[in-house]
Image (cartoon, rainbow, N blue to C red):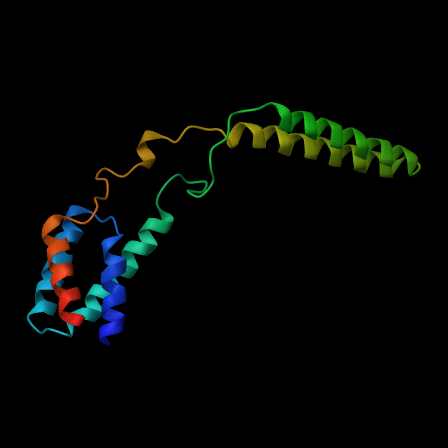
Amino acid sequence: MTSGELSRLLVELRDLRLQPTDWAEVEHLLASIESGGDDRVEQLSQVVFEARVRRSFSGPKASSDVVPTKQTSALPVVGVVCGGLLIAVGALLGGGIILVAIVLLAVFVFAIAFAGSRVAHRNADVSDSPAEQPVPVPDQVRLRIDELESRSD
């Protein structure tokens, strides 16, 4: 691994939030790299990669990137309007079996809209959060990062 890749890895390491036990491992790896153990850079890279993956999958089950909105009853109303329009189109197409199929489709559209208005605003369950929250970079690790960055400049 080149010094440029190590520098990029150290910059990324500053922004991570890890479990306290993971920070202890990172500190050990940084100490090994400081003392000339270049083979530890690969292990440090693996720790950073795993932390990024954990961060992307953490958070609420739905999506951690979605900004919550206030609950509204507009979605079921939209479902009813769309369902009504579908039924009107089905009646214009001639009725009969086509109308029955389109009425079923309209009921399905309304059901999806109604269910979506209820599921989207559920509060996160307390059991969804991990027992131990990730923490930012501890001071001793930050000092080791600073030392390695000054050495690579």
